[in-house]
Image 1 (cartoon, one colour):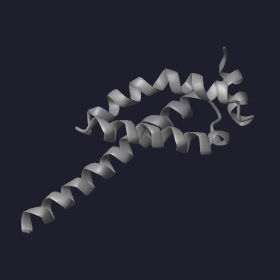
Image 2: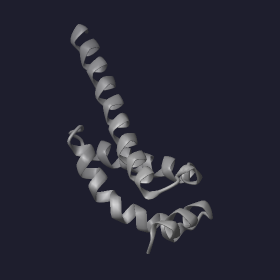
Image 3: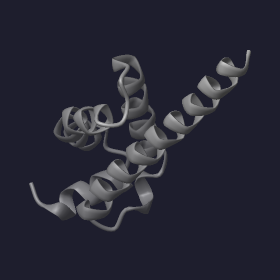
Length: 96
């Protein structure tokens, strides 16, 4: 399958195209997220949320490189947000 097939499929809301992209990147994104997070459930949640956002914005991707970039950047940003939040929680738990 070529890039045009995937982009057209995303524009048309083709769930099979989404499923193929999901299967291609899910494991890779979980591994990537696990470099930031320690809890396996957090890793899965971040990756699932990322794919939900991807599906909601599927019409905004001109090529597969932008899809890949979106997925990785979204996972990274969400992981960093969780890390920052946990850091604040630990700080205030220490004060109690």
